Amino acid sequence: MVDPVRPVPPYIAVVGPGTATAHEASLARHVGALLAQHDAVVVCGGLGGVMEACAEGASAAGGTVVGVLPGCDRTVGNRYLTQVLATGLGELRNGVLVNSCDALVAVGGSWGTLSEIALALHAGKPVASLHGWGLPSQSVASPEARLFVEVSTAAEAVQAVLPPVPQGDAG
Image (cartoon, rainbow, N blue to C red):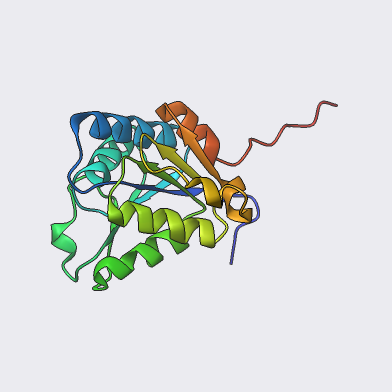
């Protein structure tokens, strides 16, 4: 039963290459920290690269980080995870990750990242791409394209995927 007094935090996935450049890791760390500061739950693939960097940033900011692992061994997740789901699904875990979040930030790009972006858009979830994949010109007219935004900073990425803050009553 959902407690009507306690708001449910947004779950935001942060995805990207398992082997990240220093720049990608820095961006992911910043995204993770900003999401934690906005009380979002960070969901990631739980391993290295962008996944570990975003988990490190969120953890350092006091946030909650859920790692969705491809294998069956929970102990292989990175040390910054708060909770670990060992799926045993390999790359199919991307669907679990996408369906457990409200929106997705992609930092950099790899084939796995591209699959997560496609799954998120197909599921109708907002996606912010930070220094990564873009949409091909022929797909810009698709209904899903309105959910996709290319951004150039961590702050823009977080702003693009977080729900708007409700305004209090003025009276």
